[in-house]
Length: 275
Image (cartoon, rainbow, N blue to C red; front, side, top):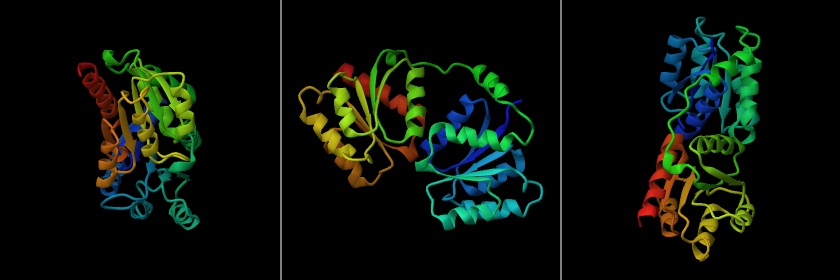
């Protein structure tokens, strides 16, 4: 029987990619978007492990940990924190409240979270890696957008965790994927390949996404390629700037799921083909 993992995360995109990563590794997953409902699910579902963000609506992660620690029926359930907060005082506060491990979102690779989970669960109910892999392989194959088969998608993103997840999702739909972590690398690939669509983060090392988009649209060879901006930035001025530079869509990571990103890619490609 697969271990049950509860993810308590209000960032829709990050929560979705975490959930898909765990499911492909053979875990049963639950998802809460705020601390109050997360604590309720811990009490009702008794998951084998909890992945917890600290900055949450209604009840923050520290408050949840204090409530959990004071409830003997759930106090022993292991918790791994995954947060943007990474100062030593914040980490120590979580550890004092019984957290088993603490990961900073921007500093771990895709496999690290699975390794941490397996380490915590290995002393629990004895579930093995082999059983996880068997469960994962038995999952149904997701429905495929046939219109996306063979489409070349360029993904410019420097977050390793997100890069692996989005790559897997696109490959499932039959896309040919090209990935770059920064602008110089992206333009080097553009010199060899002509993607059908570009997914572009804004916050990148070196050249930012706005500058990359500007250069794409100024070049006769690439200006026709539709670009979807996918970023943590979501201010009105950011969205307006992206659209003024020629972006076909501006998606805020915290507001979309992986499936919604696929739907937007499909919709933009259809718009291009019909124009």
